[in-house]
Image (cartoon, rainbow over all chains, first blue to last red; front, side, top):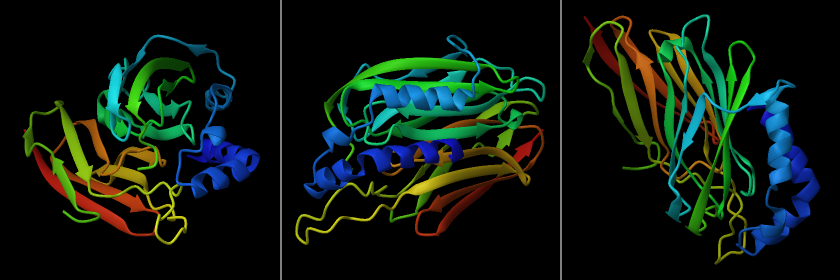
Length: 155
Length: 109
């Protein structure tokens, strides 16, 4: 996660004291949470200046997650996944977690279709973003909001 | 199951061009590094699987980078186009340097 690692460190440097203090109490560091603005900046960065469009990508998540420690998600991109036209990369970003980045995927045409499922931790009710970078450089974004009953970031 | 133990489901046969689904789960606590041991008061150091790679006959199918927001005992499902018979290999990379791996053969007709 080369691009994102830099961002995370930036976040850490800015709010490191808060994270350490809050983590020291064994609590979710509310004051050191990522903010939607930071997530937005991260999305702009991974888009690399390309216009961010909607459509093509869908992010399927439950409307309400009783347990934030394990929230299933499926990200799907409408793409033929051929050598000429495929999804290069997908980023998953949770804007109100201690660290906004969840994971990224480097896809190849060998997959045949672009559909990936995993499970993530969500600290609280928030918006989750999925960003697809296509082989032609175009960028698509999907956002879903999940209501979290019990936060699950501490593990 | 213990840390690093892997379960997966990959069909053993497929027709040429069929898109199969690979489903995997690996036992791992995915420790965030944000929590503190209540008894000793010390911070529990981060220990997560930070990378997953799948190859098919030596060619990369997908690489995925994971952060602390990935749930414990990470589950992952993704597709693969069965173009030829061969070996599907998967590797999970732990923060502590360990690499967990699994593989399966598929016959394509």
